[in-house]
Length: 249
Image (cartoon, rainbow, N blue to C red):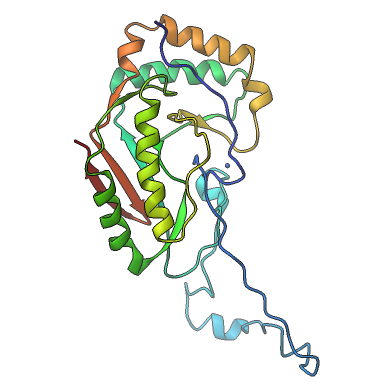
């Protein structure tokens, strides 16, 4: 039996995640003005430089610098008190896996030189959503209650077995999302572990011959079938800079 299939995909306008990754956009609120209101009063006046210079390092708001993140752009605007949140199954990469990944990346870069290896590996169970800070602990507790009875399973780069079990996990996560009026996961999801990413849509370069050649590298790699399996013992929830783990039975 061949190892897990490789797939090329682009973000759905939200992933990273350019994510990975999936996200939702915060609603923007625009207020109208009365007919008798002066246009000047409805505009935000700039802060004079003389005032700004009184407080070095102080900014009117956070500045997103995509150059710091390899060209990736935030999928929803930063707002104080909002915490980007994501539920996933972690994958702890072993040395053999990284060796295989290096071979795949080197070959894929002959088609798309701007590909960059992922720094960490996971299998998403939710989109990226926005939580208010005071919702984090209740949200995590609701997740723990929902997944407490879910059995562990095995996955590869793209799930070829255990798909039904992951749908069960997503179903429980979606119920928590609905409790907090948040976006649920995709319909008919394809579960996968992202290996590399690049800015922009590179599907035309990667699909077809490139993916076929990458699949041959995987199939010929020693013990690739066992190497590309992971024993999922927990799911994690990342909210801002906080991490929460929930064991699976």
